Length: 398
Image 1 (cartoon, rainbow, N blue to C red):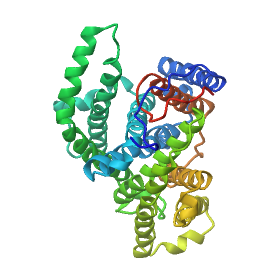
Image 2: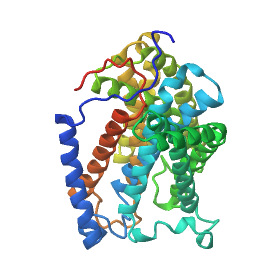
Image 3: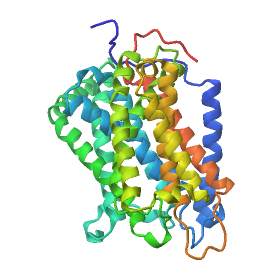
């Protein structure tokens, strides 16, 4: 094995640090508000009403969470379907990020649903509706989440196979790992297909309400734009996650992997940008960019800082080879896609006869921050005890 490639192994570091304590405090605050919501109803802690049926719990916790989990299926496709073996080191962290991301999307959705106790209905065939876009999204997300947990099984088995205290568990994990390994190709392909389906269908949700959407986002190809933006944000999210984890665990950034990975980003981002501008041109809506409305301003911010600027930056090799430059460009894309989802679900969507403007309550913000904090904490716990991150075993606690 070369000096640049190390096997995945547990970090085995001190779990509770000052940063982790902050995460746990934020999680605790969010849990308190969530409990209040389940006891006294969704209206007790939110600013939602009949005109604004969803807020940041859908725009951030669900729509943005699904988009930013795209690194799982994009890296799986790159490494396993296109056989780019060089990128295997980032597949496991991307898989873990996607698995946790979709898990917390489900938790966020359950908190947002008025009748949260009916969230299991899509698994019952008698309740299926072939005319519902949301049903297709829910079914694909559930199936893909199941696939992600199956794909993560070899990592769990690899860890338990080394537990000499539990010989029966070791034998079982060895057999299970061998079985899953023989059929893993099926789940990898299924994961990529399912991701493409629900990533695009999330956009179709807003196509159903054209009279309430601003013309900058009201397009019949919104589902295609959602899918292309998911492709574009997959690798940048992997880059951001890898560099943040490296800094947290005092490891050197894997620039020998991340820099070549960044070469794909301008191509994917350029395709998305081309379709985005082309759609406005075909619909004769380019003039709306300069109308000066809040929607137009948010659209310009989304496109300039989230698409155009990082696209130009990543065209230069010196940016791709610079840890700081690469991190900034990748982070801009991640934030740009997050802003796109917020724009589509909150900024562009407006009731026909609004009586007031929606702004998230303290409770909504607290729950969202709590979910994100708990996700980060779970990520740290898992990489600390399971072989996810490739490193030489010289990391120091932070």
